[in-house]
Amino acid sequence: MSGPNTDYDPVEVAAVSPAEVEAARDAALAAIAAATDLERLKVVRSEHTGDRSPLALANREIGALPPQARKEAGQRIGQARGAVNQAFGARQAELEVEHEARILVEEAVDVTLPTDRDPVGSRHPLTTGAELIADIFVAMGWEVAEGPVIEAEWLNFDALNLGPDHPARTMQDTFWTDPGEDHLVLRTHTSPVQARTMLSRGVTDDAPIYVVCPGRVFRTDEYDATHSPMFHQVEGLAIDKDISMAHLKGTLDHFASQMFGEGITTRFRPSYFPFTEPSAEVDLVCFVCRGVNPEACRTCRGEGWIEWGGCGIVNPRVLQACGIDSSRYSGFAFGMGIDRTLMFRHGLEDLRTLFEGDVRFTTAFGSEL
Ligand code: PHE
Image 1 (cartoon, helix red, strand yellow):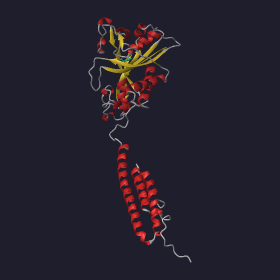
Image 2 (cartoon, helix red, strand yellow):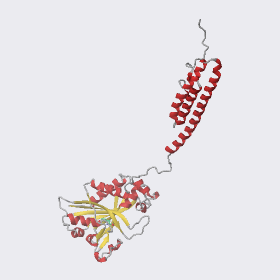
Image 3 (tube, helix red, strand yellow):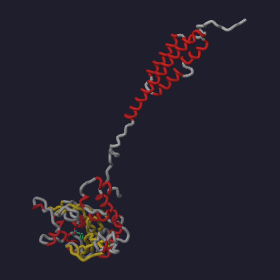
């Protein structure tokens, strides 16, 4: 007859022996201490407290013990599991704090840093503006010409019918260079580029001259909201057969409407320049009120027109001084301030903003193509 096995079988229940339980506990505690991050701790937890962990298996063995041994083994295993759980909880809290601290350092964002630490900058509106003007003329088949800013007195004045005693020399307050006998000036206008072009390349029936000359000019003016001792002009010169005021008017009307929009045309008022005859001041239709109810317009102050520049038919004396046969060829010329033109175009109130190098201004206006 077989009966219940009441004998204590030390082989079958080896897992609950004090040495085994202690070893399992120590292994768990060591693994918990060695876990350096939360992910590793999670793995350690399932290995040492999960269903298949040595202590869980030992716990299950308790039932197989003779009643007298159960209490003691239960206490031993319970204490071991408690110690492991407690160590686990403490390590978990420790690693969480560490994790938080590391995230704060690693993922820190300094919201006070400038958004763009390597700004690309932009081109100056005077550069893009001069190019825009040149492009309008290049589209009509004109060439672009440039000349030096330190200019021979003869080219700046004499060649343009402004002899040494000509009263109009005083109209342009001139910076002279030292020593005076060099007869050099900071050019007072871009008109000497006309003379240079005519002298350097002459004119033939097959090669008429159509040039536009943007550039920097100098006069001994005050520096204020509408004047500067250094500013920019654009000069136009056309020399061909049978050139008339009508060609000049048509060209300037086209230039004005390209620059300021459809419907902005020009009018001429009689004037005087030594290098042109007849001469005229050019006015633009006011681009703000467009001549409608100008009384209320603050830009043209009731005029309906805005002064833009000077122009005329090239004086035959200038053609002769520059080696051109004035009986075969005639021409027109015009000149106006680029700075002033850009002030109109962008609604700028102070000329100085164009010269003071504030990058906030440059980036606001310099991105125009
Ligand atoms: N050079 C003249 C000025 O500076 C402008 C101008 C150019 C007038 C060409 C007529 C012809 O005032």
